[in-house]
Length: 496
Image (tube, rainbow, N blue to C red; front, side):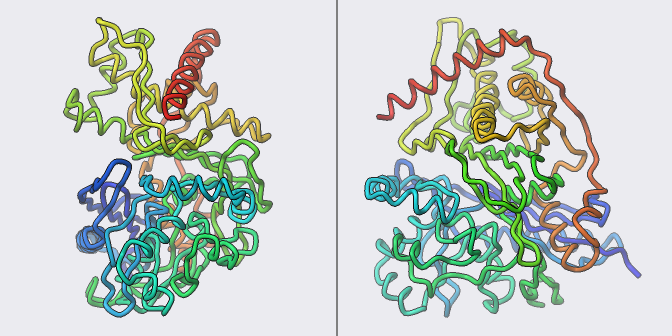
């Protein structure tokens, strides 16, 4: 009998990837393709849904074909995805009514401000664990219904479907047979009551979203239907779905309360598992569903930073002061400090704990002697400082992690992870399998397929690649953080 394999579809903000894993968590095959980012106006970010689907299909086929030439058989599919990104499509044709509105998009900031002024935020927070911010899906859906001709009438007549990216891919993979999502993606829409575990009629009315558009919400490990035979040449069951940050926490085996992961991709997302009881943050962190299995949700607190790796992309693509992200480690090591330069990378606003959609990026402390190395190091440092702000908020909420598991492309940079450990005064652990988001999606599919007996059995495959212990003097750390907080306050003041 051939070796059982698991396909993880990892649809991200800048690229679509497909990775085939063995049951031991080894990568058997991988395919990745970038797709265009669309910026129609200031603060707007869009994707072409057809490009999302085409790159997903191409990479999934390539990874499966390569893996199965090595003697294994893909037995189940897991999906993980950029969260909150909003797609509305025609139920008859499957065609999107417009481009996807990406999670980074800020166009509904005024809508959120008006709802806050009306006193709606407390109700939204109590039901969803989220704050009123254009980051989440609900105001994006309403914007599409109000700005695409005829869309609202069609939606109310049940002719349109809404989905986050997982739902859109699932629809196409199953040839339009399944319109569903999982509890983690649903929990990021501002329309899902995370205590009742259902779409909430009061929220749907508040955001003016017809219930007829909404997908069925399933557990993270569940029967999501079959990938049609036209996709891979045979039907393959789709058995797991989770939003990217929740999938990363599963891939990092954060299965007991207090376990913490921090992912450094396009943005940075810290997620702390808090167990079966919902904990509402008093410090502007988000309460969310970490995963839901057998109908029972496990909750988490999350801090969302909108720009992490995207700041390094900015250095490469817009500033053109590096050619490859890997250059940043040597440049940062090559100087003793930034000479007081701070970069606040608020390119699409500031996320937790500030939640300022109008903030924009800023550089402070420039001198005549400031060069490329200082700008590069200040960019890397800004990611650690933003993470430190989240950990302060966690501590104020009564949660004090004893270590943090890190993943994402940025943590291949040893200097950056060491600086992070120094700033947080916590050990940082990096896993051997860095593709934790995809691995988490594969784990869910394997769990539902019976290839893993439990999450604890899956946790046995986690291995550490490297650990970083804090080594910076406390006085230096405090001085650096004081300068950072001053820079953030100036950025927020300018936004007002």
